[in-house]
Each structure stands twice: as structure tokens, then as C-alpha cells.
Length: 324
Image (cartoon, rainbow, N blue to C red):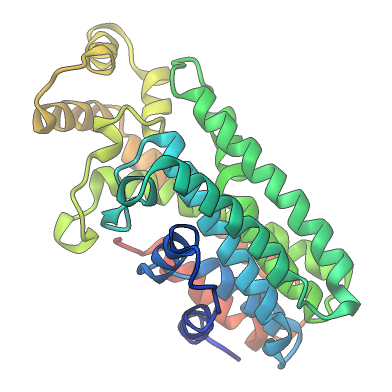
């Protein structure tokens, strides 16, 4: 069985070998730039791991895995424009290094390349994989739209936030696993179970991200914390705080959200104090553990030997215990 790291390393190598034209440089250089950054390659690795649960030949899933990663980076390139993000993986975002029009067109090209690469999937599973890929791409767009809609709202329920997380983040992880399973020869039930496993770990992954931005050790995290607080980004912590706070506590929270000029460190400290008073770190940790336990239970329902799902279980453990 292939480990997560082995699959990540394989995908890193294959992405470096992906041929792109030299000209026009302003179209293809931004694609090289975003693909060569130090991404975790989790999604393409999960395609290979999903395949490996049902087949020893993961080479048949390479094209689908590459397509998933190119599509994911296309969404990042466009998301950075919409979110007005300056950095991506500690480097200038594409629209900052070049310009917005170049980033839009290069992103469009990446989407086309993703479908071109996906066409290399074995014919026996291409139709099913293509339907799932299209369905997932639409769901990711829906999630991004909800995320933008939430930007100026203070009335988002926890359920609405979790639905947005599922669409924007979790469905791509889930689809990666299911696509791999389909290519590996899984039946409908098995492939659907692997999708549900991915959906649960995807939600846990994002909730963990929300917490790490506030509570991680910056020396381990590798970057400054509190960026979500500074930008008033809707996270599971802020959504819960808006519903759970009352009186002076809520007044202080709303004041910080409205204030445009502030001391960065003071805002982070005060907002974190409110989160701590409401015990939101503990509440969110319980949610993460809940999704983690659901994911593990789903794996146990697969009708295959436990050794074939062992790498996925190890992945969930590393996910739940990660510090960065």
C-alpha cells in the first residue's frame, strides 16, 4: 500500500514534468509559478490513495490526480483575485506578481488543461469520472459564492457555515477519493462510502484550519496567526461567537468588526479573549473530533481488508493532530 507521502512525492514529480508551452510567457509562466509552489498535494494524493484501496495499480489514476490538482490551483488563482489576497503560500499571489487580467486568463487556461489531462483517464471509467468532476466543480463554485455572500453578513448560522465549508473545501477532497475508487474498480457502494469519508475529513480539515489561524504556535505554524481575525473573515469561531455572545461582550465584538483602523495585535488579543470566554476552542475541537470519528467509522464499513485502508486512517490521524 502507498502512504500519503509516497503519493504526494509521486504527484510532485509528475507535476514538475507536466509540459507547458513556453509562449506566450504571460499565459503559461503564472501556471508554472503557482504549480511549483510548496503545495501539500493532498487532493491528488487522495486520488491515488482512493484507487489504491481497490487496486495495486495506481498508475491508472495519475491523469485524474493531476487534473484534480490543476483544477484546485485554478480555483486558488481566481479565489485570490476575489478575496484580494496578496500572498499565496508565502509568495506574491499571481495577480500581484503579474496583474489581474493575466491571472484570470491563466486561471481559465488551467481549467482547460485540467480537462485535457483528465481525458487521459482509462476509457472504462472516464464517463463516470467526468460526471463527478463536473458536479464537483459546480459545487466548489457554489461554495465560493456563499463565502463571498457571507462576507458582509452577521446572521450566518453554524449550519450555513458548515454547508459552505462542505461545498468550498470538502467536496473536492471527497471527489478526489471517489474518483480514485472508481478508477480502481470500486462498486457504487464502496465509492460512495469513500466519498462520505472524504466529505467528513474535508469539513474537519477546514475547521482545523480556522482554529490554527488563531491558536497555532507561530513557530510551528510557519506564518503569523490572526490573519482571519484581522480581515474579519467568517470562520467557525467567528460565526459561533456572533451567536453566543451577549451584552457587553457582543458589543465589543461588533465594535471590532466595524472598526476600520486598529492596532493589529490588540484586535487579535481582544477577539481571542472573546473566543476564550465563550470556550470556542473547546467547542470547535469537539466538532473536529466528531467529523473525524464519523470518517473512521465509514472506513470500517468498507468491505476490504483493513490493511488497504490503513494509509487513509493514518492520514486522518495526521490531520486531526496537525499543528500547521
